[in-house]
Image 1 (cartoon, rainbow, N blue to C red):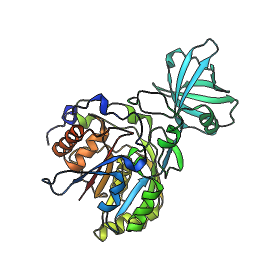
Image 2: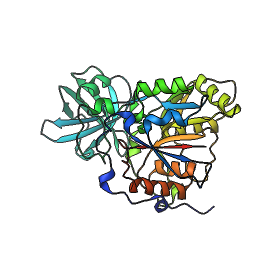
Image 3: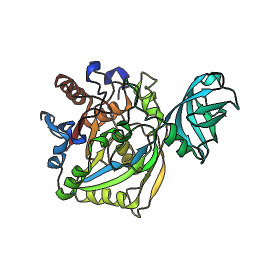
Image 4: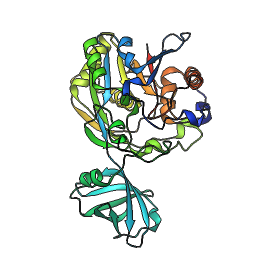
Length: 350
């Protein structure tokens, strides 16, 4: 197989189509429905509220229940140096790892004011990451983030976070704190739609993958296969694993909501967890899916429209085919679909 080049996964996107605000209602987003099996089938243009009509009784729909933390903090040292501190992960209740800018100007032991609390810089964790300690004010890392953190909107949303983002940049099934970016395909669901799916006979299951800050970072190598993704923590319970396996045996479809869910399910397949005895599983995955990958867990995918040259777009190309994916993306541009996190969605089904 010829090496894949990053520029093969690109398309022209007018900046005006990058969604800066969420849709008025979650299910009012547009939904492009495409067939994975029939390469000649045209796209259908619907709204997300119509999703239940395209799913069958017995389909297993798997969502990511991770919860986004208010990860972005603005700090100030006594000499008025401003520091942006972007939470990455907690070490314990009072210590955490974060990206910090400008990290090179910090000295071990520096005290930084964040809202009504203080944090202390405890040194580098890696070239980009730093360790911090909650020094006063807030009692825990979670309390610090809740009091002083901002919603970590992606850099292509060119505005500051607003009060509405606290709720809208969060799925309705978000429960477990840990992500610094939303699993955006899940943003289109509301409680009424989940009830409609249940009434339709769709089996909605959950897992968790905590999205790390690496999701914002561009791929570094022009040859696709040379790139590596940062590891991200996940968990999936025995009941979900069993439901997926039973559906596959009975020729019912397994539909992943988002690339995060896809990567967990395909990781589970690679690790042999889709075989009895089923157990609750957790771990980390750095699975990078690109064309040539053999999908063994999922039969369908709900996903947003992603950045050119990104690992997310490359995953969709692996599932649907690069030529068809880019053709549909260009059609979406022509039809003025809204792109990226607060944008519209695509449903790919057998």
